Length: 276
Image (cartoon, rainbow, N blue to C red):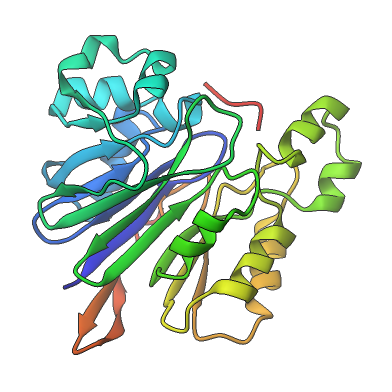
């Protein structure tokens, strides 16, 4: 069974990740405007009608600012925990809201979405693994520290969106005030390049085909730095930098008799903020 996946946007200006099969798809977060979401989906050749659910990782505005408008227009169910709902303010679309809890998979057609708790400066933050058959795609961003649950799910992924938010030296020498630097690197903020690389080196499975490095800081990181760092590790995994300015290509992964093959990506088009 094949899965398609793309980053519609990744960064403190908005986050939205698409994972789906031929019949249905989900968004993990909806942090860009409805209009921009529609435009990027159209450029990728994707139909908004395929999106059957939006899963919310946490309440920060760069993860939810497009939710109300998208749901009002397309009547898409939103899956969010009760504490996050209270902070997010989705009251106008409450009839489309459903809840989830850690470790309990939710079926969206042929997709299985498994939520699990993560470390982040939010009221009730979650990561997700999306599966179809034995194919697994993880969305692991806004993570303050690597924990046993993250390692457990990362080791199962054929594809992962993994946060590589900041370069430690750039953050230390940068213009952010001291309290904000400590908030970012203090265990409930974001993963550094070094921390993400360490997870990748130690725990990536041999069958991981794509790693999309995500949520890069505009102020404290550089895409070329991250790409060089991860590409220096010998591996068959394709390294992709998820942009904060445009959608990625649409990629696919398909299962064939107990092994996986990469399909060619479909042609790419041309082309409220958090403190992080």
